[in-house]
Image (cartoon, rainbow, N blue to C red):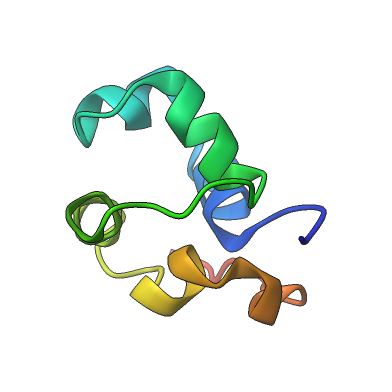
Length: 77
């Protein structure tokens, strides 16, 4: 599991709190924390909601298989 997942890097780069993102995609903050740590596999609906929330700045694959993207860098907005 990666030290920092693409999801966590993107959230932090955009200046959002876990609480803000979790509320926006209708999951609890603990679930988002586990997703960001690579400890939990999201439901398809959750992964799609995260992609939509971040305006496609992150892919489904980056959310579902974060270990493949250890070198992920957030693109400038």
